[in-house]
Length: 44
Image 1 (cartoon, rainbow, N blue to C red):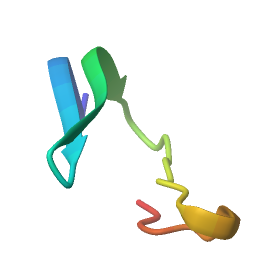
Image 2: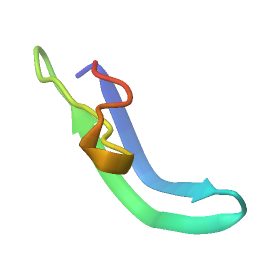
Image 3: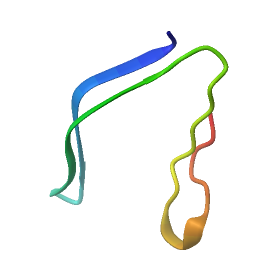
Image 4: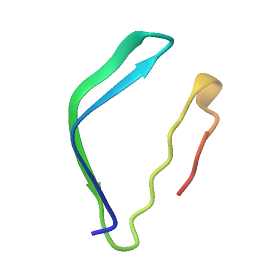
């Protein structure tokens, strides 16, 4: 396992966006955070 998040929270500008999130990234899996207009913000 490369990364693991347990009971995570995401805020932006003081506003709660996500709460109590859990996920893990394993082996050669890839993720992307997508923002406005579908533009990839941070491919890993």
